[in-house]
Length: 123
Image (cartoon, rainbow, N blue to C red; front, side):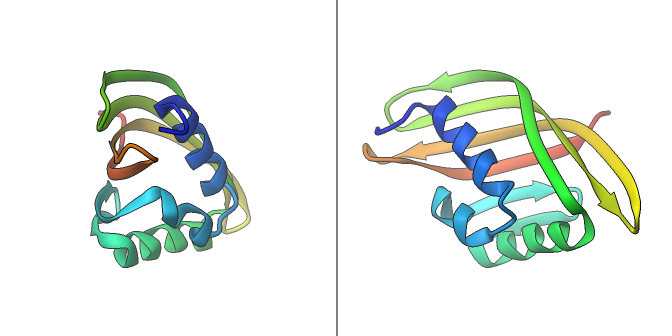
């Protein structure tokens, strides 16, 4: 792989904060499944719609993760859990939130891609 799972995750977050799905899309597998509060999203077109809907609701959104724990890493896959945070403006008011996340990466020897992401609120 040209980068570590940690480097990949950091770049994914950086690209997500551009709010341009075309910058994020190459990092996501075409058959990926993302689970968000808004529902289950399968494939790039559904995932794109979910991202773009969020970006249209939360203005000036900034997203970041911390407390990343890699549960598995091998030559073809990596799985991590983390705390995610966001901050932005909704209907003119400053808002922020956090929750827990999981990402599963698949590697092909050249690069990583996300095959699953699950973001959920704290229990």
